Image (cartoon, protein in one colour):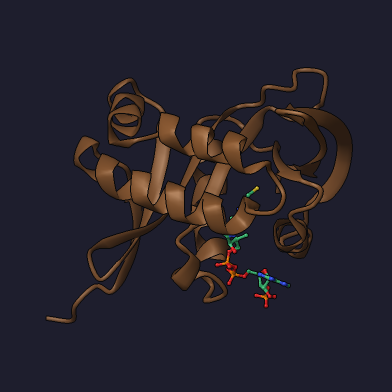
Length: 170
Ligand SMILES: CC(C)(COP(=O)(O)OP(=O)(O)OC[C@H]1O[C@@H](n2cnc3c(N)ncnc32)[C@H](O)[C@@H]1OP(=O)(O)O)[C@@H](O)C(=O)NCCC(=O)NCCS
């Protein structure tokens, strides 16, 4: 029987440790030099395996991308936090382990996140990215997102711009 190399599925409580690893590695790689180091490390420290386990158990809509049985990426979705924008849903986070970036997994994870939002009646949605995260901006533009809002966010002494990309129902 052919071996399944790659799959995307809902997260289970026993994925918590692996998601915490992907979170720490991808956040360090993406935000080092953008978010001040102390803030970044304390944001990562808060999100250890117990935090992810609680998130899954309490019903967070969290999906994982697996390659050869290893969790290499995750995404979380739900209702948009920016109620003033005309988008029902939001992709809260979408991250891949650094060595699995640029291989098409991000686009597939994005498609699965979009499907999960659609199934829960949220066909239009937003994704926020830091304006300095050039790779994420290009990624969301490439997938058809349109910049619909910008807002400041404070990280310690630093104020950074966040960009919201809107995706319409299709
Ligand atoms: C952003 C991220 C999710 C993209 O996932 P990925 O697997 O690397 O991207 P993919 O290989 O699926 O590429 C999807 C499309 O985006 C484009 N793209 C991806 N990375 C790109 C880059 N650095 N520059 C230009 N285009 C890029 C690809 O060309 C591709 O388009 P194509 O299929 O038309 O060629 C991933 O790189 C990541 O986790 N980055 C760090 C964390 C992060 O910034 N997350 C988003 C936070 S808001």
